[in-house]
Amino acid sequence: MSVQKRNNVTVVGSGERTLMFAHGYGCDQSMWRHVVPAFSEYRVVLFDYVGSGNSDVSAFEQTRYSTLKGYAADVLEIIDELKLKKVNFVGHSVSSMIGALAAIENPSKFESLTMIGPSPCYIHDADYVGGFDRADIEALLESLESNQTAWSASMAPAIMGQENGPELSGELEASFCRMDPFLAHHFARVTFLSDNRADLPKVSVRTLILQCKKDVIAGLQVGQYVHQCLPNSQFVLMDATGHCPHMSAPEKVTNALKSFLQAEETALSCI
Image 1 (tube, rainbow, N blue to C red):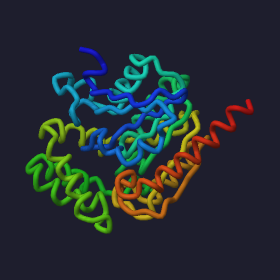
Image 2 (image 1 turned 90 degrees about the vertical axis):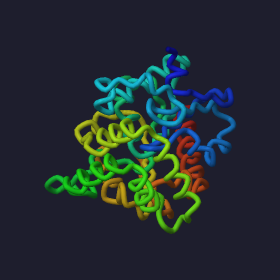
Image 3 (image 1 turned 90 degrees about the horizontal axis):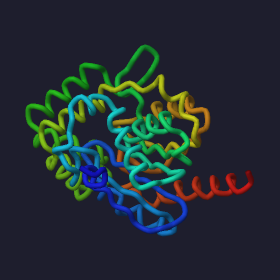
Image 4 (image 1 turned 120 degrees about the vertical axis):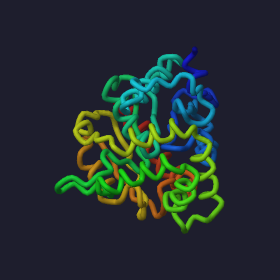
């Protein structure tokens, strides 16, 4: 099976610089449709993780995908398959950590990382504020496993942000429900029980952290923690709410990302 078929890879444009967009939990590449048109001068790479969107679910291997490193390996395989160089990786939510792991494994493949609503650990631990108690996460996973439809209906508005209207919440809910129940629970468990705090200082590539003012999944303290741990990072607090600003406030994401990429291009041209 080809990597492109496995991950339903889509390539748009043929610019000299490459942007790779990676979706979050329960989503797929279509969630980037409000952002992608603003980057017509780039080669844009979109894909679906195994178990999401129109990926080939027969490629799922429980051992490989038992940690986020399995998904990071897929990212590197896509880059190799397409013979990409110096990728600007844009990851939403869990993809922020997947991108970080890929960049740690092979930093030469990356020009930059952008993390939208990142969280290296969702569970409180001593002085670390992750947003949830362990019992909260276990209850969330149990609810998802017992009734995916009800879980999706209750979680989508909270994740998207009530202020952002029922249409976007409905789209997110529908995306959650499209996932195979077993794979949905598996990816959720891997996502919400992961702890990548120790990995953050190992990331050497330039990183942009985009944080919403109000985000129930990855709050302000988490974004600031990521910024403090990344030696080469820039933090931008956007006037936006919810955990999916690329859907609810795409112009803010686009403006911040363009500014970051343009500054990066200028810095690289001076080297």
